[in-house]
Length: 279
Image (cartoon, rainbow, N blue to C red; front, side, top):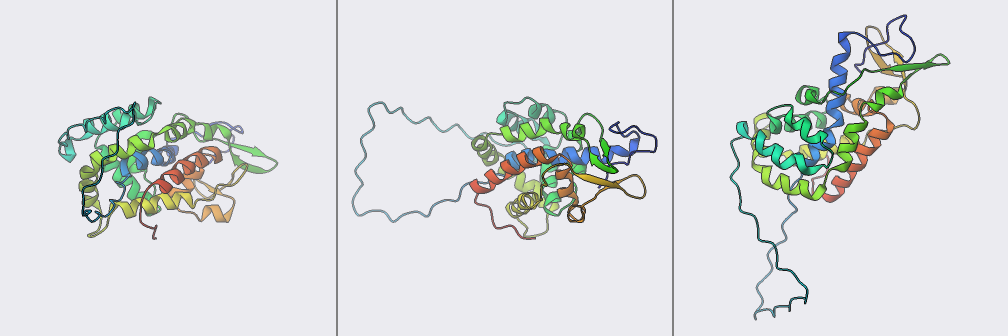
C-alpha cells in the first residue's frame, strides 16, 4: 500500500500533506477506471456459429409483419488510422459510451489511448498497479484517515474521491461498447503485440484481469490500516495486506465503489465469450 502516513501532530481526519502522496493517488485513480478501460477497450466479438448445410430445396421466405420496418443499412466501414494517430477516432467512438461527460473529458486529457489501456489491462492481469499507464485519471483531494478508540481507519472522504469514476463505470453502454471494440479491434491487437510475449492473446489477458478484480474480497464496514515504517499505511487485516497491488488499490476506492465496479465487470464477464482465467 502506498498512501503516506499521517505525520505526527496532524489532526484526525485531516488531509495527509507532502509530495509523497501522489503515487498512490494516481494508482488508485488508474484502478478506478479499469472497468471503463476494460469495457470499451477489450470487449470481443461474439463467436460465429458454424455454417449450416444448405437445404435440398430453397426455404420459404417468411412474410413480413404488417408494421415491420426495413432493416437499417449497415454503415460503411471507415478505415482506421495508424495506431500512433488513432486518438481522435478512439475519442469519437468511446466518449459517447457513457452519458456522464467525465469519460469524454478523461479521454481528451491524454494521448496514446489504445496503448495506455492495453498496458493497464496487462498490468492488472499480473497483479501490478496500472498507474503509469493511467495516471491522467488522478482524483481531486487527498488520502485521509480517521482515528477511533486507538484504531486507524480510511476516512469516508478518501472513498468519496472515487464516486464519480464508479458512476461512469456503472453507466457504460455494454452493447455500444461491443460495437466500439469491433471497430477498434485491429488497433488493440497491434498495441498488444508490442508488449506481449509471442503467442499471448489479449482476450486471455482480459479474462485474467477481470477475474483478479472479481476475486478481490470487499469487506463490510470500515477498512482499518496501520502505520508502517517509512511513510506508508498497510491494511490491518493480513488477508487484505497480502493481496496484489491491483486488488489493494481497488479496495482503497471504498466498499461501495469497489462493489459497483465488480458488478459491472461481472456483468461483462457473463456477456463475453472469454477464455477461462488462468494465473
